[in-house]
Image 1 (cartoon, rainbow, N blue to C red):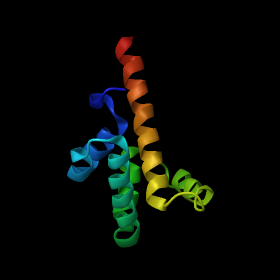
Image 2 (image 1 turned 120 degrees about the vertical axis):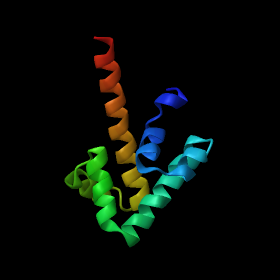
Image 3 (image 1 turned 45 degrees about the horizontal axis):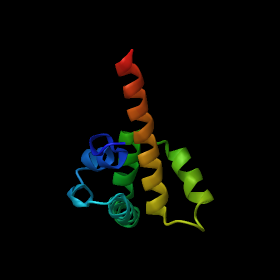
Length: 100
């Protein structure tokens, strides 16, 4: 997937996260996004819920993923994966319907 079609960059642009956009490697971008989400969990949970809503990740799905991955990943990492997965789905749908 090229840089212009990168799900993590779409998420970062939607959330206006310049720190994520300025990183060069996927892992650095992911880590910055996860750190930001961990920060929101601790300081502004309502904003986090708003982000999940905006990217179209259900709160139910997020809670289930957080419970299932609690011993493996930080909450921010789990939520970052969900946001990226959802954005990937959107990209695939756009490409599919653009071709038709």
